[in-house]
Length: 309
Image (cartoon, rainbow, N blue to C red; front, side, top):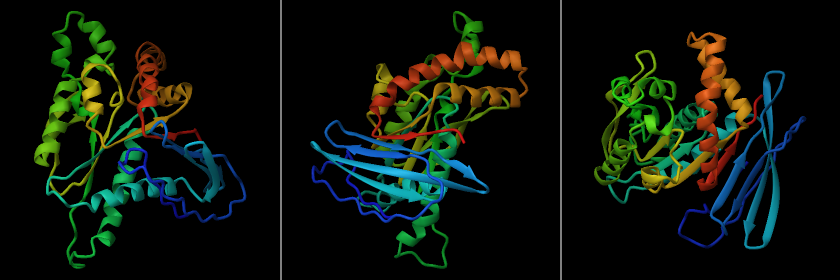
């Protein structure tokens, strides 16, 4: 499949055509990818299924310019190609070098269990893999540096000691993962420094210890594409809105909350929590957070609809 399109968040108002080539599939599942310039919204969804060892997928592309809608159907053989298409979307940005400090920053949001981390790392891996073919000026004998990197919002959790110092420490620990258990001011500062200076150290998160790890990720001037992934990146309240405004693209992984919570429940159990404790954690914390996060879906440029398979 070949696609060229004009993103809703680009400054040009000229619509560029979709160029599509279909490939056959024996079993079809509906997919949806729509671009509507009028309300600055684009929609991408996928529903992979299993057919023996292969995953077969059907994509329907809707292109809307004013009142006219053109529908194209594209069949693709495998969810892996979804990652390839998203990477291809970002590769042109990696080629831009008008400023040594240039960064194309993507904010990838979605509820717990949506698969944000997996998608972000898969797309970044593909951008880095295909980048040498775009950088024709590079010496073929020299391994080029990575041009894309993932920055997880998890590193901006408050420390456990900070939760201990709150008015209700028990509630703070029970609700860890809610917006108020993060340090968005620090995230905002890191993103601003990245925009200005082209490089910044950011923390990661050690799930074994349960605390951030300082300066564990270095985004340097050679990184031109940065995917920031996290739950609350597209919220409209307070400082979160300032964070959201810094992204060049806003992606959202849409998923049925019940399915997402099933994934989170399994994750809690896999880390050693008893089924009863894990279920309480999901119902009293994760689901509440997910319901809030889903409200920010309307702020995305691209929606990636996830369906269990």
